[in-house]
Amino acid sequence: MPDPDTAVRRVTGHFRSLTGRSPDGVWAAPGRVNLIGEHVDYNGGLCLPFALPHRTLVALSPRSDDRIRLTSAQIRPVPDARGATRAATWRGSLGEIAPGRSPGWVGYAAGVAWGLRRLGFDVPGFDAVVDGHVPLGSGLSSSAALECAVAVALDEVAGLGADPSQLAEACIAAENEIAGAPTGGMDQTAALRCRAGHALLLDTRDGSVEHLSLDLAAAGTELLVIDTRARHSLVDGQYGSRRAMCEQAARILGVTTLREVDDLAAALDRLPHDEMRRRVRHVVTEIERVRRTADLLSSRRLGELGPLLDASHASLRDDYEVSCPELDLGCSVAREAGASGARMTGGGFGGSAIALVETGRTEAVAGAVTAAFAARDWAAPAFLRAVPSDPAGRVR
Ligand code: ADP
Ligand code: MG
Image (tube, rainbow, N blue to C red; front, side, top):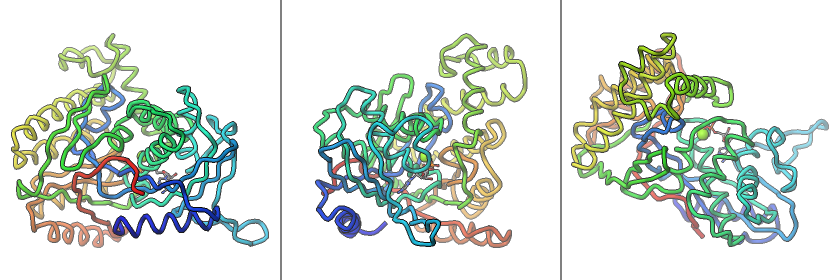
């Protein structure tokens, strides 16, 4: 991620070349890692994400009509039929945004305006330029960073006065209904409500949050993010089928969500097949691991987190079956190279893992993972250091 001033200058310059004017402002929202509590946000569960320093910037001005112009620095211009390069600017109007009609990246950004309008807010047309520094499709939630940056920008320029839960709702609507990715609400809430130096204990049953101090440096540890570069797609049905099976299990058990299951053994006895039993066991045990992790954070015992991270990964790999060879190898090599624990983070099927590593040991762990990937002729993984950072807001 470039330094903040450079990032702001870059997106502002891009906006000027699109519109000939300076933007009304620049807003940013962070990517996130989830320390623990995976695939539980759509089950009324608990999760524990924190914001990354890596952010997506949006330079934006409202318009006096209902038109929208959107450009992203991460979307390459495409050659048209005559071979000329067509700028990757999407032009449309507020009325055109609808489920099934705004595919691809535009749905994540313009969909937020649709989500806000559905909540009754009077959103104007707008010009916006996006410049993201959260790697796309790496499980670090570039999608929510994009949505939330647009949301806080529209909220401010149009004086909507939306509260954080309404902004989150509009962003989730953009992702689920316009972009067509059936994810839960953790990522958007994390981007909007995390705090620097803290992890966010989010209870997705009622949307309540608690900020738990996460001072990794004081505990002599670092969290290394291993971006495996294996790409997942949440729109391809795997995520949706997991979610649907959880909802089916909840119906069989007569509960609103799997969060309400308190006797796991009794619940498992009532489920019709092994696959469903394993999915439910993951969700119920993962929520319990989040509780134990939150207790360790509250009592500043970060040194004891490792086994919980490892158990979470095993459960996602074996019971929920959302890991992949790259994530499994990244985690096991990190552990062998000295990490006290490691797990996949985000939706899975590729993307990133996190490893808890003693300060000063991250280079060695990253080197071991790189070597193991090279030995298999896999694309080189990328690394970043996760430091709990600021939520979405105005940066200029
Ligand atoms: P993740 O959220 O883990 O990065 P997703 O598959 O949920 O992965 O979201 C990635 C998608 O979000 C991209 O394929 C693209 O459509 C959209 N997106 C995210 N950031 C940007 C950006 N800076 N510019 C354009 N589209 C983006
Ligand atoms: Mg995403």
